[in-house]
Image 1: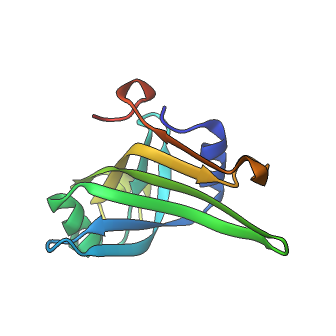
Image 2: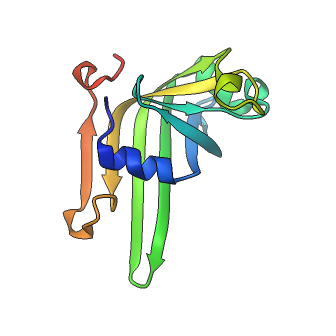
Length: 142
């Protein structure tokens, strides 16, 4: 499993993240998306109403490199920022989305983490940024 228990707890508590993909001409494309964690696979699953016709889906089908960010600011005074940043590879899958969310299209995107960076989710902001590469032994896809 590439995710720690604290990462799983934080990600489950959030409703949305932002998926960054690479377009046909190398331009970035960044959009808000809903997501779920598949703990068995160690992946992030992204579904949507018109997923198969979306730019993000087409981008992933042509270039599997993605970044996914989930963050929030639970306190403004003093400012507290928490985040999980996932760099990885993604699959544009023709099925599985409707199984996860009946109101969504059947197509879905599955993210396989290669690197995870976090801050603020440990409960002690003085611990700073935590970053690690995900290996096949961690459950990451190579």
